[in-house]
Length: 243
Ligand SMILES: Cc1cc2nc3c(=O)[nH]c(=O)nc-3n(C[C@H](O)[C@H](O)[C@H](O)COP(=O)(O)O)c2cc1C
View 1 (cartoon, rainbow, N blue to C red):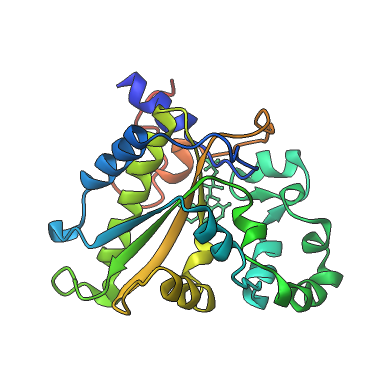
View 2 (view 1 turned 30 degrees about the horizontal axis):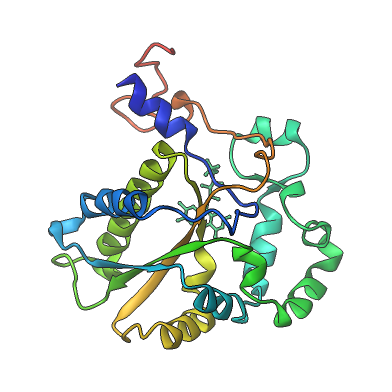
């Protein structure tokens, strides 16, 4: 039990550059895919397919795809930032402003950030890396009566977590990239990799080994008491003794 919680706690996002000369070995990729295979899915639909991309030319082409930032993303991202470690530790949710380029953290610059991002390519997000897993959802499958395929989308979250934990246990760095699901990016990736129309790209993951030591960053979480309620919403009586 303790080991599972330790693995869950140690799982983290690796957003830096990965070593292009150090590929992820096939047996490890296979293990990560086995973890995906056993993920729970609503109605056991298994509504996903995964493209493993390690072809250098294809990775380069994917990197060249335009990936502009939307006004919505830039503004909502700004609103959710913390501007000091102290603020982040107090809030216990969200991200530190210093993880982003300075212009993204200045409200006066946001319009310009969006304008300048028109020329932005996916490469800026995926950086260097030897492998991408592109996780796609079969829109033809739907758990019974699942509105807007919400159960199907949740199922892909389970696939994500299973793969991430397996990668963590193998010492492989893992970075989720949501930008692949933006319609303009999705369209281009779809063409490049022959993905049929009915498959929706939900996310991609970069896999590899970091070039440099991990940058230390504050990881915050709410306490159990912050989100758990005992029998009735709002009843904060402590039900479990803190470790
Ligand atoms: C559905 C989902 C989408 C995410 N998309 C991105 C993303 O596009 N880029 C990124 O750097 N991290 C992404 N993340 C990672 C989260 O930002 C990260 O898990 C969170 O900040 C907690 O940090 P940790 O993973 O280091 O514990 C995503 C995570 C989830 C679950």
